[in-house]
Length: 300
Image (cartoon, rainbow, N blue to C red; front, top):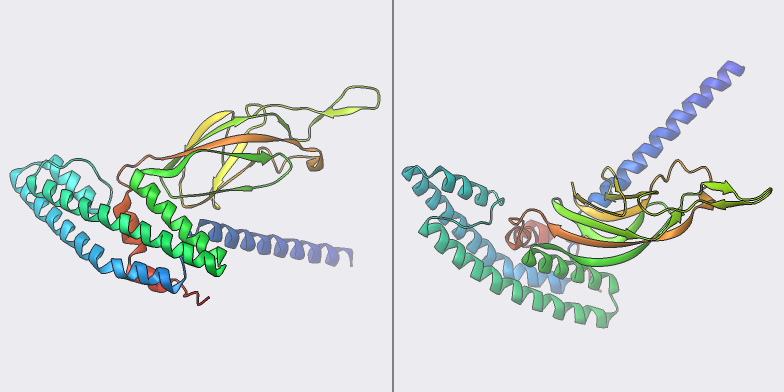
């Protein structure tokens, strides 16, 4: 009977672990998902109106790059061929040598600049109307999209010196900063906190041991990715897309979680390590007919 109970207990324990693992996987997948596009009919109409012109301009630009690549290959200019191939793959935004590519890029850049200015203005106007309706969730989605466009235009992650407080007693804490793969995140941490470790200061009295971020590190992860950790000042490159989450390390190993004390003031800056990640790629993503159609229409 005792043996049967042990086996049953083991089966139930394994089942619990599997269920927990499945839930964790679902949670991570959700966190890794890109920020959703706005869902209102007004915004879908705005995006749809700009999609044909952008797609046509982009196709013409890429066709010119193909022509320039063929010309460069014929001349034996392997460096230019390499740059043009990278540009066609969306991984190069440097200067081209050939007249054909230079002219095409100048023309396309001008069209993209005009498009983004118009698109940003129209999205902000739509956001005002949405707010009047009281739909704060849709207004937030529109605002997130405008910030992504501004960040892509500037070649940064759209964050420069945002400061938040991270509590020692809590697990993963949101920062409100959504990152994409390749963005470099710099963290500067100030303050003192305690993981719950204590020292005896009297015959019957104990007190928490405090330390800075070099003593008790801070952990960061993007969505459900593997966590990185560092001290008072450090940086890392986002390996995937998702919201930046922070917590004290070690979190799981604390024997007395309730005894954890203090907060850390963390200043976050984000920059793009890849200057070719630009507005063209973002516009290609949000103005793709499939992406626009996929967003559910909010009929509020």
